[in-house]
Image (cartoon, rainbow, N blue to C red):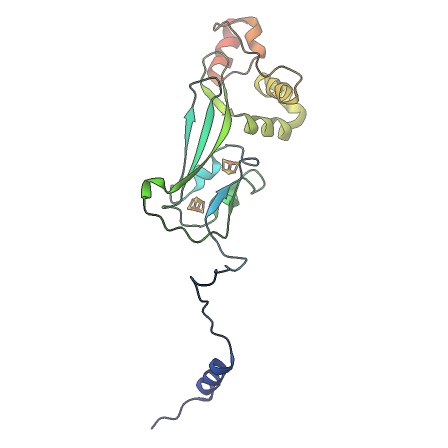
Length: 202
Ligand code: SF4
Ligand code: SF4
């Protein structure tokens, strides 16, 4: 007969004297380790709506939808919890100091209806004041204007936006005339309308 090794004997003795390694879930709540990588969650106050996380996500678990109809255009950021692999690339790449989306310690993610397995946040969108096409989220434009500092005065879109976000210019003032004129050169415009305005009013 083969004799048990000393290590195995010690493990057997330890098993008698120690608490079990497993928890009594579901009768007791399970506490994940601090470094546990659970479901990512958006922080609507920190997220800029820049779409970097959507670009970087290897599982295509992030998408967006731009709703431009109505008086308050919005970008809806969508995180699909059923396809997410909890890799953390979104948090790693987030330009908002990794605060726009963060892995949480949420791990109980079972659901019955797959079409409901997503979470969303909404961000205000800035549209071109002439053609109405999407430029970027307002928070993103403000972030860029603050990043580039005085260089933002080389771009009418950036400095006008900064003035509006500072309250120096009324945010509700938009051009009623949807045509190219000299006054349009200092409006918030998309690249195409900026080019057309500059060329036709030179
Ligand atoms: S954790 Fe990974 S898979 Fe999940 S949303 Fe972020 S980048 Fe995509
Ligand atoms: S700010 Fe961060 S979380 Fe928000 S869209 Fe950009 S990368 Fe994603």
